[in-house]
Length: 194
Image (cartoon, rainbow, N blue to C red; front, side, top):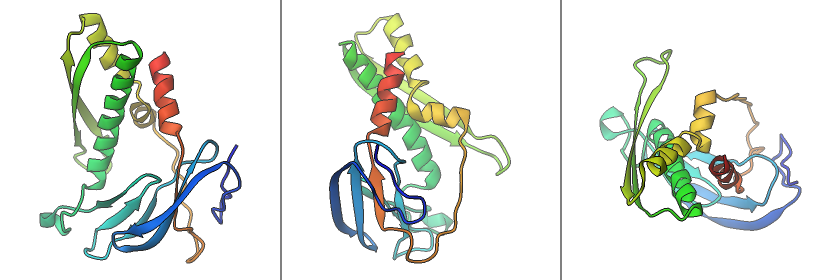
């Protein structure tokens, strides 16, 4: 099993590939794609062009997160809540696609829209996931696809809650590195097998 030490982030095992590259607004950052073990990680750094712009690097891509122009940002990317909604919807969509493909169902197209609302910081978040399914599917198949969408890894993570640990790391000790594995794919496969 691969692992990452807690303070220094030094990788010990299971390196599959290593990439470095220039990201928008940040110095060169390194990404590692690993087979197993240890947590996935995403690396973030403030962007160069706005008070809320954040450059996010995962093991496979780089994107900008920002607030809308009218809210003090530059509108250069989705907001953190947009990303949370997108994570839920895209995970559900991928899981439904995999489920239908594994069963060779005639699924033609999936469309998902996720709405998010929280009236106040102390209020419970509410997500509405609307799913449009196209294809010559039976009522049983449609029900099964909606059911598996509620078992997708992100839906399960968000519905049960998570423990979040926050640590202060000294300057220079946090590696410019994102680590990706196949954790999501494995969890999605597990959701489709039940």
